[in-house]
Length: 264
Ligand SMILES: C[S@@+](CC[C@H](N)C(=O)[O-])C[C@H]1O[C@@H](n2cnc3c(N)ncnc32)[C@H](O)[C@@H]1O
Image (tube, rainbow, N blue to C red; front, side):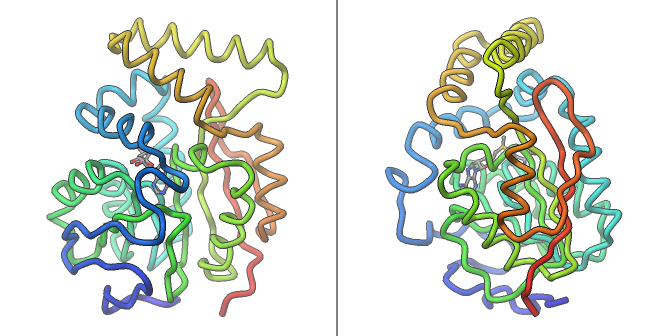
């Protein structure tokens, strides 16, 4: 295990101890790379009432998070890479369920990073939140485990295999990656039915209709969800040795990946 005793050891990443917000890093800026301006605006709007809205948009959000965090805790990692930390609510749960771990959170949205930094102030000595697009991330140490919930569908399919390959190399060879995400059904009628059901759920749960419309517009125009089969194939192509489906409901899935990487 490679524990970052000095947080400034993360290569290429400008940040401070204690979860202080950091400057944007890497070559890309908001108009380029994975996370475009529309996505930044979307996540800034979602951040304002995240805990309520995410439960309106993801019907069994709590069940999904409980499953994903439980899987991570099972491997008792000492260092965790949390991709797409968001508001830090799930990161805080990870910190409580894996009390010996140092957690490095990465998020591309400045609004989310600010919120997470505030929320995680009480555990700042073992959580570092970085403002960074995961595609620009360049750690100089490996992690015992990776965690990503509801994030990687933002990454274009064309670069997702490269990202998974990078993820495999950033993780210890015997590490696990817990990958929770939105999925897409290959059959158009199934996809349509799943989207309609989620849309109806969001409206019935009281989500602002304009935001429901924006959510499904983003999903159909800007997001890159995969079928469960494609996620598993991509994980194996990216260097993971196995990819098991642990939980799947309502168009969302939690995969448990065992690394087959070659990092030291
Ligand atoms: C729906 S939230 C998920 C937050 C949290 N993981 C959870 O389960 O509730 C998605 C987060 O991923 C971040 N994100 C999206 N694409 C990203 C990327 N390429 N690199 C880093 N963060 C990204 C967004 O800014 C947002 O905070």
